Every structure is written in C-alpha cells, then in structure tokens.
Picture (cartoon, helix red, strand yellow):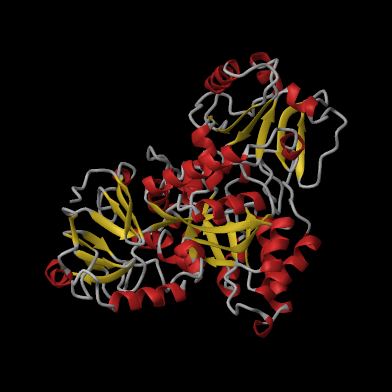
Length: 564
C-alpha cells in the first residue's frame, strides 16, 4: 500500500486536464463534527479529498482554497464524522449466509425456535437438508440446549443441522445423525464432543470438531451461493459503516472467490483476510507469501487463523479449572505439536498469526507457544521484525497472564458485544472469582497492551454502534448489569473509538495509511447521525450510519444528507 500511496501523492501534485489548480479537491466535506483520532489536531470542521487521499483537515474557511470548478462540496450539517470503522474480527461469508438463509437470532424462546425451523422445513422437499444459524438458549425457559427429539417432532423427513450463535455448538436431528453415522458408540473426535443423555444416546448437540462429522455430509454451497453470500455480506457491511473488515478465517475456494469479485470490481469494502491453519490454505500462504494491498489497496491476505479452543456458551472453551456449572474443563481443538513448526515458519516468512483463544487455559498456552516461537526465531531471521501476532477473543484470562500481552507485543483482538451477551451466563459458567479476568479491557490497556475491537459477526449482529456502546457501557442493550460484572473494565469513549479505528489499522500494519483523519492518509470515513462521543450511552444504540466513504468514494449514502 505504501507504493500505491506514493503514486497517489504524485497524482495530487500533477496538473489537472480540466485546467483546475493541481491542489483542488475532488470532494470537500464541510460543517462536520469531525473526530480525527489525530492527537495533534483532534477536532475539525472540514475535510478535503483528492485521488483517494485526504488532502486537508481543518476549518471550513481554510478548506475553501481547495475548491475548484469540478469540486463537489457536501454540507454535513453538523453530522459526526470519524475515521472509517474497522471490524477486527468478522466472518463475512457467515454474515452473508445469515442474510440469505435461516436466521435463528430472533428466536427468543424454545417455542419460537421450533416454529421457525418448522416453517423452513415445510418450504423444502422431504429429504433435503435444513440448515441455519443464530439460536442461543440463554433466555429460554429453561435455558437448555435443544435436542434431536425436539427437531424430530417437527422435521421427521429432513436432516436438520442448526448452529448455535457462537458457531461452536450445533444441534442435529436423528436423520442428520444417522447420515453421519453417529450413535451411542461413536467416540468423540479430538477437539470435539458429542453430548449424550442419561441413557447414553446422543442428544443431538455436537461441540466444535464433533460438528464436522455431520457438516461434511451436507452438500456444500454452490459457487453461485457463495458469491451471493459474499456480496450480501459486503453490502451489509458498508451500509452499517464498516470501511474495512478483518476476515477471521477463509479456505482456498473462498480466497479465490474474493479475488475474483475484487478483480471484477464488485466489492468496495476493504478486506484484511486470514486463512485457516494448520492445513492447505496455511501451507499455500507460507509457500507463496502474502497478498498485499491488491485491487487498489482493497484486499490483503497475510495472516493464518488458528482455532485453539471452543466457546464459553457451549462449555468448550479450555479452562484451567472445571466449569462452575458442569463437570468439564473444555478442550483444545489443535495439538501444540502441530502448531510449533507452523508458527516458526510463519515468523521466518513474515506471516502474521491470529489465534482464537477464549478460556484461560487456551490463552495461557497460546501465549506460551507464541513466546517459544519468538525466542526460537530471533528478529534477524524474520522477514518482518515486528510480527504483531494476535489473540482473537482473549476472553477469559488469568490475571497473571494479562501483562504478558504487552510484554510479548501480542495484540488482544476482542469483541465488546460478547461481554454484554455473555453476562447472562458467564457468571454461572465461571463463578465470581474468574470474572476478574473476563473481558478485561481496562486491565489490558493499563498493562500497555493494544486492543482492537470487532464483533465476531455472525456470532453477534456485527453493528459498530453495538460494539461502541458495549465497550463504554459494559451493560446489556436494555441497561442491565451487576456489580460482579466489573464495570471498572469499561473503556472511555476515546479508547473505544481507537479500538475501532487506529488500533485495527496498527493490527493490520496499516497505521501509516489509515486509522485517523489526517492529511496524506486514505479517505476512509464513517458519517453518523449523532455525536457518539457526547450523547447518553443508551442513545448510541439508536445512532445510524448516514454515509460510508472508502478511498474518497461514497459507497453508501442513506439519503439523509443532501449530496449535490
């Protein structure tokens, strides 16, 4: 991207063919309430843009000198402008599939869950698979997992497989279990668990790698369906105000599809992509090297994503001590012996690593493995001296491990919305003592660590205003919390804004190009209906994206700002 920016800066200075002064802007935004995230000049009224770059940031009066005969001027009428939001942990294909397929996020009861599945089953022929995602039992009465018997009653003639919202658990009916050959004698696969009832029969609930026993029997999406999902996910993202998403894992066919659609000019959203490892995709990026700033700086793949444990809600996150509400400590999904050689090779070849770790045991072990790799491959043997490796979620930490993030230079990639979703069940899973290290944003920041924020959509809704609100309020969307939920771990609004702008740019090696509204940086802007830095916290949730600007191009316009 640095080469691209050098060319763009030259273009800014070249004479224009239309005879306008070479310094005249393509677009000028005026009368804005601009939060720049630039410490030298934190507030502004106007922004001028030329050839994808920010040319000037300052007062309305000073911006006038950048106007030429072809300049487009947009009056923001006091609306709030922030650097383009980045979601640092996103699953874009899953977001698109949720838009296109059975979305169970609205199932607020066991009965409504079954009704939604019944309606979908009635619309497909007998024998065809019924799949969906998004259910969570937290508010059901009682809050228990659904079973194969529940699904058998409403879908006796179709195999059914439905992912829990976190993606680490799924429920299957009897026909789906039979298709996978799962019965009372089927052993648990490594990194997964088949839940059983009191008689020893499978309940239908499958955790983590056990899900793959069924999933591999489901006909894969067609290339056309995958393309629809990607385009739907990209469209939804820019409409919400995301200028970039950091895609937390992809396989080779998905990687090639992204490149195809970027090559065809069908995606405007920036994607910083990771590939899953260990496996084929990781081997390819280690062999071929990263894809940097392709398609006019919109697409990068330089990261390997490892899934090290499960989730707290499904009780598959790996804990140092057993769960408070079950006789299990969770489990790891990858063997340390498989990760060590991949980590060392990634360091040598300048490939970033990000690892899903939720439980305190998984977090401690992955920090140990990172430290071991950093020691084994010194900086002079690395293609990139500063690797900026990440822990995705860093959700439950033993207090003694919190300072290790800053000491090792490891980025904590966290999802504020998880804290306000999980507060309803995490205390029962963990007990009061372990909550001190749960979603410990402020403790990490005070230790010197960098936190980059994301949503984990489609696990959560993937809306930037929910993430911002969750970070500063640390309460449910209706204002609920408890003293045991450590309100002191909430962050300031300034910190929350950096978690969605400056720090994601750093985590993606993009801090020189984006993350602030500053002359010379890319013109990525998110324009909001309300001043999220000042309004009461509950009103943040009602704030809307009015316009999304990527590289100076308006890629989403709600129509609420007159744009001549």
